[in-house]
View 1 (cartoon, rainbow, N blue to C red):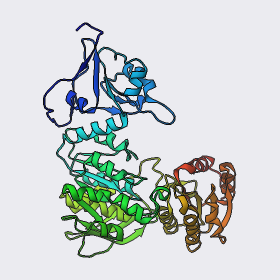
View 2 (view 1 turned 60 degrees about the horizontal axis):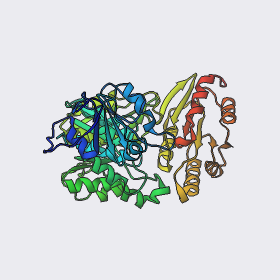
View 3 (view 1 turned 180 degrees about the vertical axis):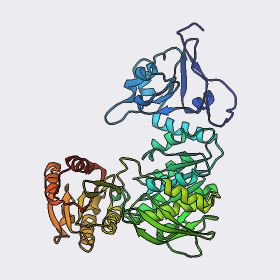
Length: 490
């Protein structure tokens, strides 16, 4: 065939599944393969590098062109090819609209009706080439922290591939699976949902052999309605491993999870108390002077003190969950403790991140919020050693739907009963928190500038101040401004 003339590769024959490899047959299962010229791209890609952000493309990589609300990845096709991409997955709608073009020589198009579904299908094909444990971690609160703890524990004995950041949705899970490498021993994949049915989809994509749900809480009530709705949506992960013969790690402190996990044969339980159903548990939980947590990790094989680089007593159950996973995969108690103790929150963690600045201690918990995590953050503030005032700066909790008013009022009544000295609220609904805690409420703000000005006037050395709100409130901007200002009362 003459150079520059389009040709399509269809081919015959069975796909041969080779570990860590995507073949041209795999591409054919996803869509139509189009190449041009005598120099076709590699028809077998070992340990592929797949991205949805054109800025992340590397030599020989695969770019998935997605159409979003703000930008369309198809506008970057030429850019990613120029930057070294070998393949671009594109929508048939775009491809035909621009005249079914030839790709550059040595490059290829993978044309599919829906690139999102194509990405998901490709990742599942790739994941199926690996015969290895895949631990899926979901739940209402603490799943990212638990995911990091599990990966750190397993990392003492295995080569672990783990979800990066908060890549836990219908795009993040496939991208994580496509990061599996030939020397991966175990994969730890975070799965996050906010609508019914999403967990079933993520499970079908990831094909987990093991499941861990942290808890059932008041998350995304706008879409999941109530706790029963949350439980039904989250425990679809249990349903998957039950059908596939997998294992679940059951948080026996959570009654809904304990009930949903009943009958999952061979599934270890864990909790914060010693009982016959728990393979490991915690005792002697303390918040040290520097804010870090210590506790005695107990199991049927013995016990050992653990010092976490985290605060908030609710993180103990996350650590015990990670320990349960470690014990299941044959790690020793010293290995598990090593894995837990070596993990430290990365800069910008924003999940009860402790920042000591010019005599002030800041608890930056601005990543996200629902009523359960809000109460946990308030408890962490109250447990924190403090020589001055305990101050709470609370923003709106979003995606609560019709339950929004009640949930904010509940937080106000809860806070009124706790040893918090000052409360400032920010946003719209957060005003309801203040109205239920009149004894400590010092004002409501819709301007970050005005809130910062009052904080600079109110705060003193030795105070501890908590910032907590949903991601959309962007309270981290006030945290950054407060640290930068470096001028509070002495």
